[in-house]
Image 1 (tube, helix red, strand yellow):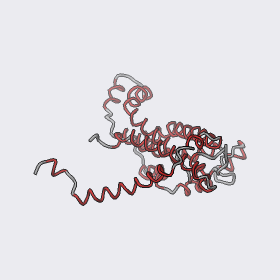
Image 2: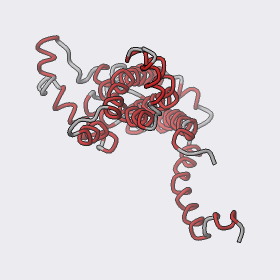
Image 3: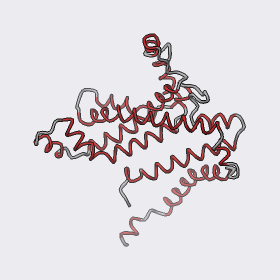
Image 4: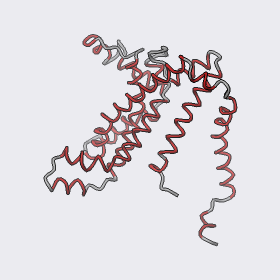
Amino acid sequence: MSRSTRRRPPALAMVAATVALAFFLLPLVGLVRRADWGSLWEDLSSEHALTALRLSLICSLSATALSIAFGVPLAWVLARAPFPGRALVRGIVLLPMVLPPVVGGVALLAAFSRSGTVGEWLFDTFGVQLTFSTAGVIAAETFVAMPFLVITVEGALRTFDTRYEDAAATLGARRWTVFRRVTLPLIAPSLLAGAVLAWARALGEFGATITFAGNIEGRTQTLPLAVYLAREGGETSEAIALSLVLLVVSLAVLVALRDRWFVRA
């Protein structure tokens, strides 16, 4: 038996894999088939759709920027700084990845609403109210998106050859210089992958956003919320058109990042 024959999956596994693929593929095919291609551009260029798209881009890019600003230092601490309870801290950081988004929204309300643990102080001291505001959307999207960046960057830092950093430090480079000139360039591909993944997650966020920030057109209504509202209002054509935008973006991100997780076959 040749090596290629031995590596070939059994027929039963191929059948099961085909059924599984069909399970994922058929809903996408159904979405494409039900799209009204004649009115697609009209649906996507309506004022309602453009407002939701503009808000989605602003909020998702802002959430990605916050994820980078705070997620990279957090990933560095988790990867490089041994301290008691590090596993628990990592679990808390990554919890939004598995937590139901609606539960995340309820938790954000408990913390940052006007009667929340921190929200009451923010409003009384600075007049800041996150609920039912664009800032609240950004906060909700950051909450669910940052873990994807943290886990990606932490993985890169853990597999990083620290001898390069040691050599730079031996030559007299300061810690910030070592990070900026040595560490950051070498983990840049993983950082980019994590940022793009976080952006895609923020762009598609629904549950935490609608629970924490509401569904107010022009202020908190992002693309996923616009899809939901259009579907509930009987605007099936517009709902499918906006869904296709999110589908294309998500698929493009996953295909582009494929080689960040798997060895090229």
